[in-house]
Length: 278
Ligand SMILES: [Ca+2]
Ligand SMILES: [Ca+2]
Image (tube, rainbow, N blue to C red; front, top):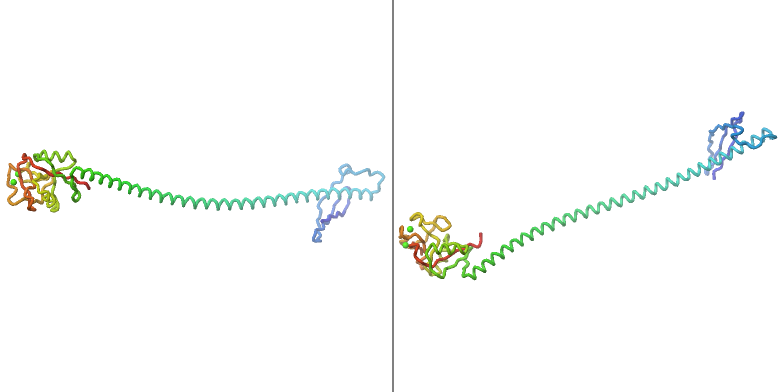
């Protein structure tokens, strides 16, 4: 425990200069020049009755009072210092708590950010997957529709060959009526572009109107879709009808070159063609 001593160094008139020695716990003495000049007024010090006391007794009383005042002030300062120390420790603790909290929040923020990135990636993958499934679904729907159409066509005596369906009529009509019949079925009179098709049509062993005509300009044979005939399978000596035979038919089916030109008004069986793939 600190001990404080008050020593009188000089008393001169009503001014008193004090010297304080403070002993610390480490036994060091701090010679603290005090530091204080006390204005000593009779009424200010509240001195008790001085009458009848010698000057020496009066000094002792005065010093005693000063000592008490200073001790009280010192105690107040000590209390204040202790309070400030406590406050400082509380603030330090509070600061440390806040720092810890801040680090926890930072960690939490980073974790959330990582989680957000993962969710975003996952979302993008799902979107991609959905789009792929959508495309697949559309393809399958298209496929199903094609198959359904093929099935319906097969039920109507259509025969599938390569990328087309073919239907041979059960009755006979003129070339123009035959053409119209095919159009009504969403088809057209058969157009022969390849050798395989030519051999295919011969297999029916029937005289059949096909989509070939030179009615616009004699000798310039065209298909019903407006394209020019380039590869032909005319039978020997055909076409020989001139202006009187302007429509093409398959007739000599035992020969690969089975075509003949015939008058368009003659009623014959015919063959329609419908493409099923673009
Ligand atoms: Ca002709
Ligand atoms: Ca002919």
